[in-house]
Image (cartoon, rainbow, N blue to C red; front, side, top):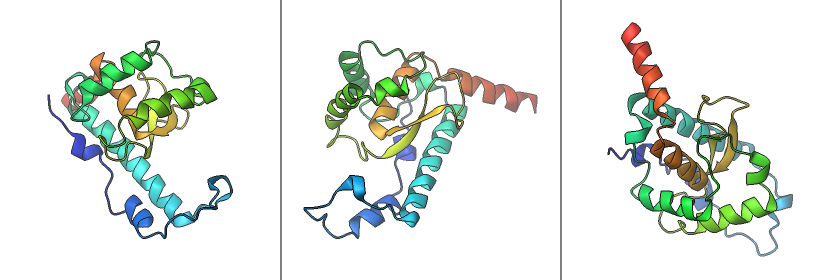
Length: 175
């Protein structure tokens, strides 16, 4: 199976440049009251869009069922099945449930297992709420990278993203 992990990794230049050059976080820092810097927000938005476009372009060229997103896809998939046995990769994700207090705690526990294993495991990205739809304003959920990996690995294992490849190949053949 081809591993295209490097294509999904964020560029170290944009997001990290802002973080690495920053002073240490003050002990009295309150994230809830912090202002967002417009340039950082714009850089962040650019990275999120690049990630979505890159993943979609990969799915148009390679069947999801034959794709590996990380070097540890098997581990992530087995962990997802263990910690979220009710997760149905074909179903529409209930964002309210996922982001509820209980949902956040379950996902946080899941994600922390990859803190030292997956680069940028907690970097924000977009995941499609349903594998039957393309990325669109009403079809995406903002989520940490690790949630994206877990959800998309499960979808790919079930062949739920193969339609993207098939649609792209049919369009290519008819042009």
